[in-house]
Image (cartoon, rainbow over all chains, first blue to last red; front, side, top):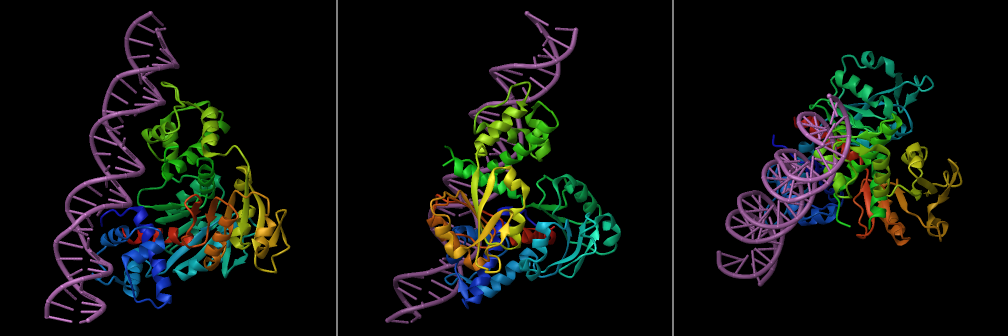
Length: 206
Length: 206
DNA sequence: ATAGATTTGTGAATCATTTCACAAAGTCTC
DNA sequence: GAGACTTTGTGAAATGATTCACAAATCTAT
Protein backbone atom coordinates (compact mmCIF):
# COMPACT_ATOMS: atom_id res chain seq x y z
CA UNK A 1 0.00 0.00 0.00
CA UNK A 2 1.11 3.50 -0.91
CA UNK A 3 2.51 5.59 1.92
CA UNK A 4 -0.23 7.67 3.47
CA UNK A 5 0.70 10.84 5.35
CA UNK A 6 0.23 10.86 9.07
CA UNK A 7 -1.80 14.03 8.80
CA UNK A 8 -4.17 12.27 6.42
CA UNK A 9 -4.75 9.38 8.83
CA UNK A 10 -5.48 11.80 11.66
CA UNK A 11 -8.03 13.61 9.55
CA UNK A 12 -9.73 10.34 8.62
CA UNK A 13 -10.22 9.68 12.33
CA UNK A 14 -11.77 13.10 12.69
CA UNK A 15 -14.08 12.57 9.73
CA UNK A 16 -15.23 9.32 11.29
CA UNK A 17 -16.10 11.08 14.50
CA UNK A 18 -18.11 13.70 12.61
CA UNK A 19 -19.89 11.05 10.58
CA UNK A 20 -20.94 9.34 13.80
CA UNK A 21 -22.33 12.64 15.03
CA UNK A 22 -24.28 13.07 11.80
CA UNK A 23 -25.50 9.48 12.06
CA UNK A 24 -26.85 10.17 15.53
CA UNK A 25 -28.67 13.18 14.17
CA UNK A 26 -30.22 11.02 11.49
CA UNK A 27 -28.49 12.77 8.60
CA UNK A 28 -28.29 10.37 5.64
CA UNK A 29 -25.84 12.05 3.29
CA UNK A 30 -23.12 14.62 3.71
CA UNK A 31 -21.03 16.62 1.25
CA UNK A 32 -17.26 17.02 1.39
CA UNK A 33 -17.99 20.66 2.05
CA UNK A 34 -20.08 19.93 5.14
CA UNK A 35 -17.43 17.59 6.51
CA UNK A 36 -14.74 20.16 5.84
CA UNK A 37 -16.69 22.87 7.62
CA UNK A 38 -17.12 20.66 10.67
CA UNK A 39 -13.45 19.79 10.75
CA UNK A 40 -11.92 23.16 9.99
CA UNK A 41 -10.44 22.15 6.65
CA UNK A 42 -11.40 22.45 2.98
CA UNK A 43 -13.61 20.30 0.80
CA UNK A 44 -10.75 19.60 -1.59
CA UNK A 45 -8.72 18.28 1.33
CA UNK A 46 -11.52 15.94 2.35
CA UNK A 47 -11.94 14.57 -1.15
CA UNK A 48 -8.21 14.15 -1.65
CA UNK A 49 -7.87 12.32 1.67
CA UNK A 50 -10.62 9.89 0.73
CA UNK A 51 -9.35 9.48 -2.82
CA UNK A 52 -6.25 7.66 -1.56
CA UNK A 53 -8.51 4.76 -0.58
CA UNK A 54 -11.17 4.73 -3.29
CA UNK A 55 -14.17 6.77 -4.37
CA UNK A 56 -17.00 6.59 -1.95
CA UNK A 57 -19.24 9.49 -2.98
CA UNK A 58 -22.00 10.16 -5.46
CA UNK A 59 -21.60 13.20 -7.66
CA UNK A 60 -24.27 15.78 -7.17
CA UNK A 61 -25.24 14.25 -3.84
CA UNK A 62 -22.33 13.62 -1.52
CA UNK A 63 -21.49 10.66 0.73
CA UNK A 64 -23.87 8.19 2.35
CA UNK A 65 -23.14 8.72 6.05
CA UNK A 66 -23.33 5.14 7.39
CA UNK A 67 -21.52 3.72 4.39
CA UNK A 68 -18.62 6.17 4.55
CA UNK A 69 -18.37 5.64 8.31
CA UNK A 70 -18.12 1.91 7.69
CA UNK A 71 -15.43 2.35 5.07
CA UNK A 72 -13.41 4.60 7.36
CA UNK A 73 -13.62 2.07 10.19
CA UNK A 74 -12.34 -0.53 7.78
CA UNK A 75 -9.49 1.66 6.57
CA UNK A 76 -8.49 2.56 10.12
CA UNK A 77 -8.67 -1.07 11.19
CA UNK A 78 -11.36 -0.48 13.80
CA UNK A 79 -13.35 -3.60 13.00
CA UNK A 80 -11.64 -5.70 15.63
CA UNK A 81 -10.52 -5.84 19.25
CA UNK A 82 -7.01 -4.77 20.23
CA UNK A 83 -5.27 -6.25 23.24
CA UNK A 84 -3.53 -3.50 25.19
CA UNK A 85 -1.14 -3.62 28.14
CA UNK A 86 -0.39 -0.72 30.40
CA UNK A 87 3.14 -0.27 31.70
CA UNK A 88 3.02 1.94 34.75
CA UNK A 89 0.16 2.16 37.22
CA UNK A 90 0.45 5.82 38.10
CA UNK A 91 -1.97 8.71 37.89
CA UNK A 92 -2.19 8.85 34.13
CA UNK A 93 -2.45 5.09 33.82
CA UNK A 94 -5.32 5.15 36.26
CA UNK A 95 -7.09 7.79 34.21
CA UNK A 96 -6.60 5.77 31.05
CA UNK A 97 -7.99 2.56 32.52
CA UNK A 98 -11.25 4.30 33.28
CA UNK A 99 -11.43 6.18 30.02
CA UNK A 100 -14.57 4.97 28.31
CA UNK A 101 -13.52 5.87 24.75
CA UNK A 102 -10.81 3.26 25.09
CA UNK A 103 -13.22 0.36 25.55
CA UNK A 104 -15.77 1.76 23.14
CA UNK A 105 -13.38 1.64 20.20
CA UNK A 106 -12.30 -1.91 20.82
CA UNK A 107 -9.12 -1.29 22.81
CA UNK A 108 -9.19 -3.76 25.68
CA UNK A 109 -6.74 -3.48 28.56
CA UNK A 110 -5.62 -7.02 29.34
CA UNK A 111 -2.68 -6.32 31.59
CA UNK A 112 -1.27 -3.67 33.92
CA UNK A 113 2.30 -3.72 35.21
CA UNK A 114 4.21 -1.70 37.78
CA UNK A 115 7.22 -1.95 40.09
CA UNK A 116 5.57 -0.51 43.20
CA UNK A 117 4.79 -3.31 45.71
CA UNK A 118 1.97 -1.15 47.10
CA UNK A 119 0.23 -1.32 43.74
CA UNK A 120 0.96 -4.90 42.74
CA UNK A 121 -2.00 -7.15 43.43
CA UNK A 122 -4.59 -4.37 43.41
CA UNK A 123 -7.55 -4.69 41.05
CA UNK A 124 -7.95 -1.87 38.57
CA UNK A 125 -11.26 -1.95 36.78
CA UNK A 126 -11.21 -5.73 36.90
CA UNK A 127 -7.58 -6.13 35.89
CA UNK A 128 -4.93 -7.06 38.43
CA UNK A 129 -1.75 -4.99 38.60
CA UNK A 130 1.23 -7.33 38.14
CA UNK A 131 4.89 -7.02 38.98
CA UNK A 132 6.71 -5.70 35.94
CA UNK A 133 9.56 -8.08 36.70
CA UNK A 134 7.21 -10.82 35.51
CA UNK A 135 6.24 -9.06 32.29
CA UNK A 136 7.69 -11.69 29.99
CA UNK A 137 6.23 -14.67 31.82
CA UNK A 138 2.97 -12.85 32.54
CA UNK A 139 2.03 -12.43 28.91
CA UNK A 140 3.68 -15.60 27.65
CA UNK A 141 1.77 -16.97 24.70
CA UNK A 142 -0.76 -14.16 24.61
CA UNK A 143 -0.46 -11.81 21.69
CA UNK A 144 -0.38 -8.16 22.65
CA UNK A 145 -1.22 -5.54 20.03
CA UNK A 146 -0.43 -2.29 21.78
CA UNK A 147 1.64 -1.28 24.79
CA UNK A 148 0.95 2.01 26.55
CA UNK A 149 4.04 3.39 28.27
CA UNK A 150 3.15 5.53 31.27
CA UNK A 151 6.39 5.31 33.21
CA UNK A 152 9.07 7.74 34.33
CA UNK A 153 11.38 8.81 31.54
CA UNK A 154 14.42 6.98 32.83
CA UNK A 155 12.98 3.48 32.41
CA UNK A 156 10.95 4.07 29.25
CA UNK A 157 13.60 3.00 26.74
CA UNK A 158 14.50 -0.12 28.67
CA UNK A 159 10.83 -1.14 28.81
CA UNK A 160 10.36 -0.33 25.14
CA UNK A 161 13.20 -2.74 24.37
CA UNK A 162 11.55 -5.45 26.44
CA UNK A 163 8.13 -5.15 24.83
CA UNK A 164 9.61 -4.96 21.35
CA UNK A 165 11.38 -8.22 22.12
CA UNK A 166 7.99 -9.67 23.06
CA UNK A 167 6.73 -8.88 19.57
CA UNK A 168 4.58 -5.83 20.29
CA UNK A 169 4.32 -3.71 17.12
CA UNK A 170 2.66 -0.54 18.44
CA UNK A 171 3.51 1.73 21.35
CA UNK A 172 1.66 4.71 22.76
CA UNK A 173 4.35 6.59 24.67
CA UNK A 174 3.53 9.12 27.39
CA UNK A 175 7.08 9.28 28.73
CA UNK A 176 8.90 12.47 27.71
CA UNK A 177 11.62 10.68 25.77
CA UNK A 178 12.30 9.89 22.14
CA UNK A 179 12.12 6.10 21.90
CA UNK A 180 14.46 4.18 19.62
CA UNK A 181 12.66 1.18 18.13
CA UNK A 182 12.94 -0.92 14.96
CA UNK A 183 11.30 0.39 11.79
CA UNK A 184 8.39 -2.05 11.90
CA UNK A 185 7.22 -0.82 15.30
CA UNK A 186 4.82 2.12 15.29
CA UNK A 187 5.22 4.71 18.04
CA UNK A 188 2.92 7.61 18.83
CA UNK A 189 4.02 10.11 21.43
CA UNK A 190 1.84 12.09 23.77
CA UNK A 191 4.08 14.67 25.33
CA UNK A 192 2.37 17.14 27.58
CA UNK A 193 5.44 19.27 28.10
CA UNK A 194 5.82 19.72 24.35
CA UNK A 195 2.24 20.91 23.96
CA UNK A 196 2.60 23.39 26.80
CA UNK A 197 5.80 24.75 25.34
CA UNK A 198 4.16 25.13 21.95
CA UNK A 199 1.48 27.23 23.67
CA UNK A 200 4.16 29.20 25.46
CA UNK A 201 5.79 29.87 22.10
CA UNK A 202 2.47 30.94 20.61
CA UNK A 203 1.81 33.33 23.50
CA UNK A 204 5.29 34.81 23.22
CA UNK A 205 5.48 35.29 19.47
CA UNK A 206 2.39 37.13 18.32
CA UNK B 1 7.96 37.52 13.01
CA UNK B 2 8.12 35.06 10.17
CA UNK B 3 5.77 32.08 10.39
CA UNK B 4 7.56 29.13 11.99
CA UNK B 5 6.28 25.62 11.32
CA UNK B 6 4.70 23.79 14.18
CA UNK B 7 7.05 20.88 13.61
CA UNK B 8 10.00 23.21 14.05
CA UNK B 9 8.73 24.53 17.38
CA UNK B 10 8.19 20.98 18.65
CA UNK B 11 11.72 20.06 17.71
CA UNK B 12 13.09 23.12 19.50
CA UNK B 13 11.41 21.86 22.67
CA UNK B 14 13.06 18.51 22.17
CA UNK B 15 16.48 20.07 21.60
CA UNK B 16 16.07 22.01 24.81
CA UNK B 17 15.35 18.83 26.72
CA UNK B 18 18.45 17.18 25.29
CA UNK B 19 20.58 20.21 26.05
CA UNK B 20 19.46 20.04 29.66
CA UNK B 21 20.50 16.39 29.77
CA UNK B 22 23.91 17.30 28.37
CA UNK B 23 24.20 20.15 30.86
CA UNK B 24 23.56 17.72 33.73
CA UNK B 25 26.31 15.51 32.38
CA UNK B 26 28.68 18.46 32.33
CA UNK B 27 29.07 18.54 28.56
CA UNK B 28 30.10 22.04 27.50
CA UNK B 29 29.58 22.03 23.75
CA UNK B 30 27.54 19.96 21.36
CA UNK B 31 27.46 19.65 17.57
CA UNK B 32 24.32 19.72 15.45
CA UNK B 33 25.16 16.13 14.61
CA UNK B 34 25.13 15.03 18.26
CA UNK B 35 21.81 16.77 18.86
CA UNK B 36 20.35 15.20 15.73
CA UNK B 37 21.45 11.75 16.78
CA UNK B 38 19.82 12.17 20.16
CA UNK B 39 16.57 13.39 18.63
CA UNK B 40 16.30 11.02 15.71
CA UNK B 41 16.68 13.68 13.04
CA UNK B 42 19.49 15.03 10.85
CA UNK B 43 22.15 17.61 11.54
CA UNK B 44 20.93 19.73 8.62
CA UNK B 45 17.47 19.78 10.18
CA UNK B 46 18.87 20.95 13.49
CA UNK B 47 20.87 23.73 11.90
CA UNK B 48 17.96 24.83 9.72
CA UNK B 49 15.61 24.91 12.71
CA UNK B 50 18.00 27.11 14.66
CA UNK B 51 18.78 29.32 11.68
CA UNK B 52 15.23 30.72 11.72
CA UNK B 53 16.10 32.48 14.96
CA UNK B 54 19.74 33.44 14.53
CA UNK B 55 23.13 31.78 14.46
CA UNK B 56 24.17 30.42 17.79
CA UNK B 57 27.03 28.10 16.95
CA UNK B 58 30.76 28.31 16.38
CA UNK B 59 32.11 26.75 13.20
CA UNK B 60 34.50 23.92 13.81
CA UNK B 61 33.27 23.57 17.40
CA UNK B 62 29.51 23.41 17.73
CA UNK B 63 27.12 25.03 20.22
CA UNK B 64 27.82 26.07 23.79
CA UNK B 65 25.33 23.97 25.74
CA UNK B 66 24.19 26.42 28.43
CA UNK B 67 24.05 29.31 25.99
CA UNK B 68 21.97 27.49 23.41
CA UNK B 69 19.66 26.20 26.14
CA UNK B 70 19.16 29.77 27.31
CA UNK B 71 18.43 30.98 23.81
CA UNK B 72 15.89 28.23 23.28
CA UNK B 73 14.15 29.06 26.56
CA UNK B 74 13.97 32.65 25.38
CA UNK B 75 12.59 31.68 21.97
CA UNK B 76 10.01 29.36 23.50
CA UNK B 77 8.99 31.98 26.03
CA UNK B 78 9.94 29.85 29.04
CA UNK B 79 11.52 32.67 31.01
CA UNK B 80 8.37 33.46 32.92
CA UNK B 81 5.49 32.00 34.94
CA UNK B 82 2.24 31.09 33.19
CA UNK B 83 -1.05 31.19 35.07
CA UNK B 84 -3.11 28.14 34.19
CA UNK B 85 -6.68 27.17 35.01
CA UNK B 86 -8.07 23.68 34.81
CA UNK B 87 -11.62 23.19 33.61
CA UNK B 88 -12.82 19.79 34.76
CA UNK B 89 -11.72 18.00 37.92
CA UNK B 90 -11.88 14.45 36.62
CA UNK B 91 -9.28 11.71 36.41
CA UNK B 92 -7.09 13.36 33.84
CA UNK B 93 -7.32 16.71 35.54
CA UNK B 94 -6.22 15.07 38.77
CA UNK B 95 -3.23 13.50 37.04
CA UNK B 96 -2.25 16.86 35.55
CA UNK B 97 -2.39 18.71 38.84
CA UNK B 98 0.17 16.36 40.30
CA UNK B 99 2.37 16.30 37.22
CA UNK B 100 5.68 17.70 38.31
CA UNK B 101 6.86 18.80 34.85
CA UNK B 102 4.02 21.28 34.88
CA UNK B 103 5.33 23.23 37.84
CA UNK B 104 8.96 22.79 36.88
CA UNK B 105 8.54 24.65 33.58
CA UNK B 106 6.73 27.57 35.13
CA UNK B 107 3.14 26.55 34.49
CA UNK B 108 1.27 27.30 37.71
CA UNK B 109 -2.25 26.03 38.26
CA UNK B 110 -4.13 28.89 39.87
CA UNK B 111 -7.69 27.63 39.53
CA UNK B 112 -9.68 24.42 39.14
CA UNK B 113 -13.34 24.38 38.15
CA UNK B 114 -16.00 21.67 37.95
CA UNK B 115 -19.78 21.23 38.06
CA UNK B 116 -19.84 18.26 40.43
CA UNK B 117 -20.97 19.35 43.94
CA UNK B 118 -19.04 16.41 45.37
CA UNK B 119 -15.81 17.91 44.06
CA UNK B 120 -16.46 21.60 44.69
CA UNK B 121 -14.73 22.78 47.83
CA UNK B 122 -12.12 20.02 47.88
CA UNK B 123 -8.45 20.98 47.98
CA UNK B 124 -6.33 19.67 45.13
CA UNK B 125 -2.64 20.13 45.70
CA UNK B 126 -3.35 23.33 47.55
CA UNK B 127 -5.88 24.70 45.09
CA UNK B 128 -9.59 24.67 45.88
CA UNK B 129 -11.99 23.27 43.31
CA UNK B 130 -14.58 25.94 42.48
CA UNK B 131 -18.02 25.82 40.94
CA UNK B 132 -17.70 26.40 37.23
CA UNK B 133 -20.84 28.52 37.35
CA UNK B 134 -18.68 31.11 39.06
CA UNK B 135 -15.89 30.98 36.51
CA UNK B 136 -16.26 34.57 35.38
CA UNK B 137 -16.51 36.07 38.88
CA UNK B 138 -13.88 33.65 40.23
CA UNK B 139 -11.12 34.89 38.01
CA UNK B 140 -12.26 38.49 37.78
CA UNK B 141 -9.33 40.80 37.39
CA UNK B 142 -6.76 38.03 37.35
CA UNK B 143 -5.08 37.44 34.05
CA UNK B 144 -5.09 33.82 32.94
CA UNK B 145 -2.59 32.69 30.32
CA UNK B 146 -3.66 29.15 29.57
CA UNK B 147 -6.83 27.12 30.07
CA UNK B 148 -6.69 23.35 30.12
CA UNK B 149 -9.97 21.79 28.99
CA UNK B 150 -10.50 18.37 30.56
CA UNK B 151 -14.27 18.13 30.25
CA UNK B 152 -16.72 15.87 28.43
CA UNK B 153 -16.96 16.62 24.72
CA UNK B 154 -20.46 18.03 24.86
CA UNK B 155 -19.57 21.04 27.01
CA UNK B 156 -16.11 21.74 25.63
CA UNK B 157 -17.12 24.26 22.96
CA UNK B 158 -19.39 26.17 25.30
CA UNK B 159 -16.58 26.44 27.86
CA UNK B 160 -14.10 27.43 25.18
CA UNK B 161 -16.40 30.30 24.24
CA UNK B 162 -16.57 31.42 27.85
CA UNK B 163 -12.83 31.42 28.44
CA UNK B 164 -12.17 33.14 25.13
CA UNK B 165 -14.55 35.86 26.25
CA UNK B 166 -12.47 36.17 29.42
CA UNK B 167 -9.43 36.97 27.28
CA UNK B 168 -7.56 33.66 27.50
CA UNK B 169 -5.32 33.30 24.44
CA UNK B 170 -4.16 29.67 24.75
CA UNK B 171 -6.08 26.44 25.25
CA UNK B 172 -4.84 22.92 25.81
CA UNK B 173 -7.79 20.77 24.81
CA UNK B 174 -8.18 17.17 25.94
CA UNK B 175 -11.82 16.92 24.87
CA UNK B 176 -12.27 14.92 21.67
CA UNK B 177 -13.76 17.79 19.69
CA UNK B 178 -12.47 20.31 17.19
CA UNK B 179 -12.81 23.68 18.92
CA UNK B 180 -13.83 26.76 16.99
CA UNK B 181 -11.99 29.81 18.34
CA UNK B 182 -10.85 33.19 16.98
CA UNK B 183 -7.59 33.31 15.04
CA UNK B 184 -5.63 34.94 17.83
CA UNK B 185 -6.30 32.08 20.25
CA UNK B 186 -3.83 29.18 20.13
CA UNK B 187 -5.25 25.70 20.60
CA UNK B 188 -3.31 22.46 21.04
CA UNK B 189 -5.23 19.23 21.06
CA UNK B 190 -4.35 16.09 22.94
CA UNK B 191 -6.66 13.45 21.56
CA UNK B 192 -6.09 9.98 22.86
CA UNK B 193 -8.62 8.38 20.55
CA UNK B 194 -6.84 9.83 17.54
CA UNK B 195 -3.48 8.41 18.62
CA UNK B 196 -4.96 4.97 19.22
CA UNK B 197 -6.63 4.99 15.84
CA UNK B 198 -3.40 5.99 14.18
CA UNK B 199 -1.80 2.95 15.82
CA UNK B 200 -4.71 0.81 14.70
CA UNK B 201 -4.16 2.06 11.15
CA UNK B 202 -0.45 1.31 11.39
CA UNK B 203 -1.12 -2.22 12.62
CA UNK B 204 -3.65 -2.82 9.88
CA UNK B 205 -1.71 -1.46 6.91
CA UNK B 206 1.68 -3.00 6.91
C1' DA C 1 52.46 29.80 11.17
C1' DT C 2 50.59 26.06 8.28
C1' DA C 3 47.96 22.10 6.98
C1' DG C 4 44.37 19.22 7.73
C1' DA C 5 40.16 18.25 10.16
C1' DT C 6 35.62 19.97 11.95
C1' DT C 7 31.45 22.08 11.90
C1' DT C 8 28.36 25.89 10.99
C1' DG C 9 25.03 28.49 8.10
C1' DT C 10 22.49 28.64 4.04
C1' DG C 11 21.10 28.83 -0.90
C1' DA C 12 19.44 25.35 -4.15
C1' DA C 13 17.29 21.02 -5.06
C1' DT C 14 14.25 17.59 -3.76
C1' DC C 15 10.38 15.70 -1.75
C1' DA C 16 5.67 16.09 0.43
C1' DT C 17 1.31 18.20 1.13
C1' DT C 18 -2.27 21.27 0.09
C1' DT C 19 -4.98 23.98 -2.95
C1' DC C 20 -6.87 25.01 -7.46
C1' DA C 21 -9.83 24.34 -11.07
C1' DC C 22 -12.60 21.85 -14.05
C1' DA C 23 -14.64 17.85 -16.64
C1' DA C 24 -17.71 14.23 -15.60
C1' DA C 25 -21.57 12.39 -13.29
C1' DG C 26 -25.33 12.81 -11.03
C1' DT C 27 -29.61 15.37 -8.85
C1' DC C 28 -33.63 18.36 -8.88
C1' DT C 29 -37.37 21.26 -10.83
C1' DC C 30 -40.87 22.07 -13.76
C1' DG D 1 -36.95 14.81 -20.23
C1' DA D 2 -34.46 19.22 -20.74
C1' DG D 3 -31.93 22.52 -18.50
C1' DA D 4 -29.99 24.38 -14.39
C1' DC D 5 -27.65 23.21 -10.41
C1' DT D 6 -24.57 20.30 -7.23
C1' DT D 7 -20.90 17.75 -6.02
C1' DT D 8 -17.33 14.36 -6.81
C1' DG D 9 -12.70 12.85 -8.29
C1' DT D 10 -8.36 14.17 -9.86
C1' DG D 11 -4.50 15.99 -12.69
C1' DA D 12 -1.77 20.22 -12.40
C1' DA D 13 -0.03 24.17 -9.85
C1' DA D 14 1.31 26.19 -5.73
C1' DT D 15 3.00 26.08 -1.35
C1' DG D 16 5.60 24.11 2.47
C1' DA D 17 9.21 21.23 4.67
C1' DT D 18 13.33 18.58 4.44
C1' DT D 19 17.65 17.27 2.59
C1' DC D 20 21.79 18.22 -0.03
C1' DA D 21 26.06 20.11 -0.63
C1' DC D 22 29.53 23.36 -0.11
C1' DA D 23 31.93 27.81 1.07
C1' DA D 24 33.38 30.09 5.14
C1' DA D 25 34.96 29.99 9.71
C1' DT D 26 37.27 28.00 13.34
C1' DC D 27 39.90 24.54 15.74
C1' DT D 28 43.94 21.26 16.57
C1' DA D 29 48.35 19.51 16.12
C1' DT D 30 52.87 20.13 15.02
